[in-house]
Image (cartoon, rainbow, N blue to C red; front, side, top):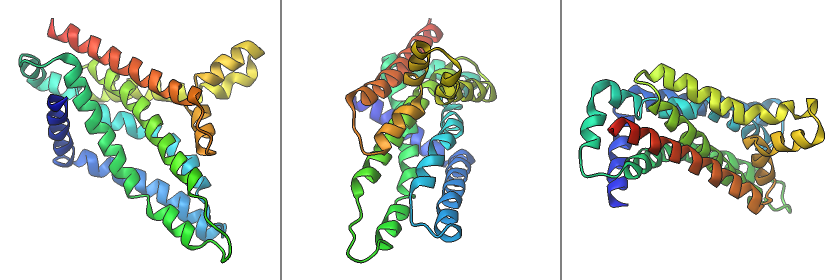
Length: 239
């Protein structure tokens, strides 16, 4: 695990040595902040609904943007072969890159903490602010981000071109986010399957403060599948 952490630290520093981190984090905070403050000042509501409503959509774009270079750039530069020639297991490399990308998301979410703090400060006297749904919402965002990152990381292994990796990752994240939107057009049995495959459906359950094991299992399973596919792709590159 120490090897994975070392790779994660290296990748995390690399993020901030390039414009990618600042562009991605800046774009995320700009859109999320606009949604929050427009609700606060234009609608006159101290609420986090708009923030939690737009964040999953933003992750559809920003997660592949974070992961697109993690493997594709190293393949193009020829440094991936050097990395794989070291006494490292494929899963250690994948885990390190995954943790670095997840840490990037964590930094972005950390900058949004003033939103719930300000909402709590604006709560009417005599009323208490319920931090439970807020904590659950942030947990849901991290779980969703981890599944998107895993898929984006796999997409990055499929090509030497970062843009191709981004587009494949974007399509995968888009599919798992919007799949339940087509459920109304299908028979009940298929509709339930499509609904269960939607990351947004599970996020909405968690954001309400309901921690169901089925929702947690879905995210863990989707993340694990993405990381497994990434590991298998790296093994193919090594051969």
